[in-house]
Length: 510
Image (tube, rainbow, N blue to C red; front, side, top):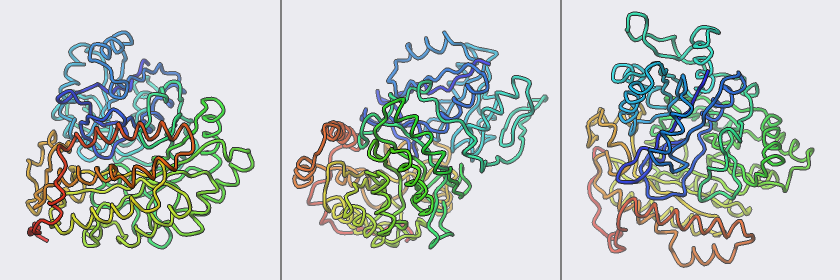
């Protein structure tokens, strides 16, 4: 069959959505966020390996015009199209599906992603979509749909569709595979890996998945994927964590290094493999036995509670450069409320330990929780400032966001039950981070801007510059500056410094 994975270049006030492989979607002025959609990349490769023709058409990250995108689509004329969607753009996808059906009446269309995984029947009732795929392994579900349409078997588990009478039907719950090593490596040429990368990553960059789901250390086995704000864990991964074997991961990396000259890998697995020290030890042995150490750098997501001296030393030996660590709040009350199973001190100790050993850290945080007071958000700002300015090296950075409770997440359900929503439950288009959607006594957008502006602190800028050690890092800092300016514009003017001394307000329903 002729198959296509599409990302139409929808715009809002001239801005493109940060949709691909993104936990939180917003329309942004920055042009430096181009995250590679890993599971769709595996889907494209799976389809090719089965003999299907594949069009990889990412109009968002290629910054295509509507006319250019439509020409590529028309010239290829696929028989089935796969669309990744998310709450803020799902209604636009419903309208786009109607357009596609009018132009290509015989085309089949399948939706995938966290929103439709949680609300699969909704899209069948509100659009002309043919299939809705549920669960995070939609690369496997998608190939099953293509094979079914080719007459090679029944629909796989996890699919919603219309039966012969036009009524919604399902093949049952999705099933996550434990055989991740059996999946083909992403075809980097087919999926145009060179189009992707973020400002905090060195080039050339390749995104990979060492596994799927958010793993936790043996010390906190009940904390796997439980954070209440994370729609991916609750809609896609079912609060599980799976890892590929170290050998399988190194096999893929070796191809990227030798064939595509990749310098930095970013593992977008939710907490990386860092929680499993035996995996890391085997990973090091594989890299060492193939003489790959020193020929690349590695960065990943990380839970601070998985870091200790032995783990961090091992990360350094394996070639790690950056850890992306979630702080989310400077309030222990908030961290507990979010079910993060960590504390501010624990996170701070993990960040400082990583920096002590020479790693750089990307710290993420959010503003606008309904229960937080002005005093709480000041704590978040101060903790972020302390950790960002601790032993600064070229590449250290942070992200600040307005909190969004995505439909289906535990935080969203709590917000519905407690009357915290400022928008309708199904006004999905308003969940795009352009404005807070939760009641809060603080100005979340202004505090996000103020926190972003920490990276303009003179001591931070100077320390970044004096620790540069390569031309790649010069390029990194230049792209980081452009990204910072775009993100600051997203949230408007910064909060005046005097506002840090404002009188605290009463939080909502604390």
